[in-house]
Amino acid sequence: MNPNDEPSRSDSRTGHPWRKGPFNIFGIGVDAEWRSNLKWSRLQGKIAPLENRLVLDVGCGNGYYMFRMLGEGARFVLGIDPSLLFLAQFHAILKYAPRLPVALLPLRSDEFSVVQMRERGVEFDSVFSMGVLYHRRDPEQHLLELAQALCQGGELILETLVVINSDEFFILHPEGPYAKMPNIDLIPSQRILNGWLVESGFGDIQVIDISKTTVDEQRSTEWMTFESLTDFLNPGNPEQTIEGFPAPIRTIVKAKKL
Ligand SMILES: C[S@@+](CC[C@H](N)C(=O)[O-])C[C@H]1O[C@@H](n2cnc3c(N)ncnc32)[C@H](O)[C@@H]1O
Image (cartoon, rainbow, N blue to C red; front, side, top):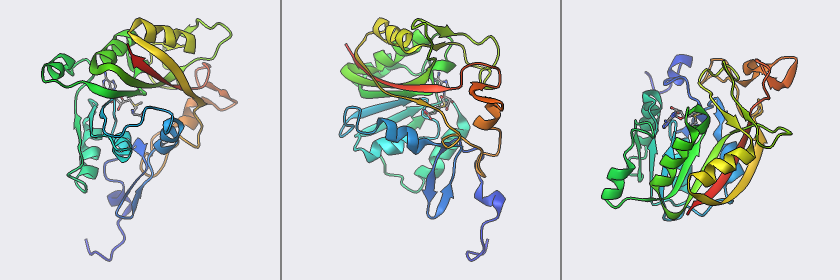
């Protein structure tokens, strides 16, 4: 391509769909489906400072948050996520900053051997799990995996869907899709979620944010042209999903490994 040419639309959207962002790569703005900076701003300053910490990001997607963690001074950030597309997006960005202390392994959390890490003397100071728990059939098993990866006194930052219901001990179990997502098994109330955390070996549990997902934060863009939140909500009542369930509300919780 002639360097003076404007990139064509298809050139500029290489790697589609970009779910998490935004990124700015030498003037090319990648306007991803999720404005992930909004989630980051909801937890920034409310968690243990990441300065010099060893961090694990489970379900890291394309690594957007890993770059933000490095920006907060983390010593090293390891991400795990089974999506090969997100791995390719991560490397497309890392190519321009190859010396950053960050790596992404294409694994699911149940394939990632914490035992082997431990044998090599590796325990994480902070572990993030954002947007993963509701995809797991056995959420308490996921919380146990996160606890095993942490050093004693280390911090878990958990972001997930919750239901707000007059029954504090409510669990939503969609039999079919939830907001058109086929793989959502259980969405607990905050009280149930806190109970799962206690059962999994966490204490000092603090809810640092509860927010409703808005179409300002999750929407279709040139870099993610498939359906997005507007298509997942009831057009007559945005308080409900298209299937009639409560619309997505997300909590961010921090907890210490006891
Ligand atoms: C909804 S996205 C969340 C991405 C990012 N953490 C965020 O908060 O925006 C869920 C991610 O978790 C990954 N994932 C799903 N199950 C996983 C598992 N068992 N272990 C690790 N990652 C998983 C998916 O590939 C996907 O990238």
